[in-house]
Length: 117
Image (cartoon, rainbow, N blue to C red; front, top):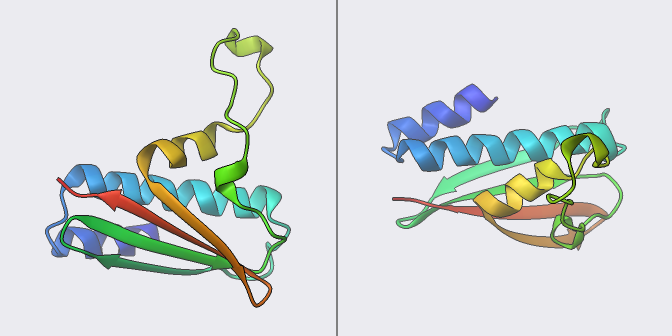
């Protein structure tokens, strides 16, 4: 699926940085859904569209309500071997994109925006 998204963005002349960021955001969100979302047996719906100044993506899933914008930031100051596992994926997503979240009809609807160069 990521190959299809990357191919679509490349065909539409989206710059390599934005294409890479979109792929990373999708990959991290789907990894979180599979690990923490409690909905491995229910597919997520993913849409990607191109706007003049940014790429817009939306991921809709049927897992428990979770707003990724409210997750606490990871501890980046302690030595690596003293840090708890997790949290870096969402941190990366928040660094690479702007997020919106809503819960509608029992589904999480996360929209992300990655700026184009």
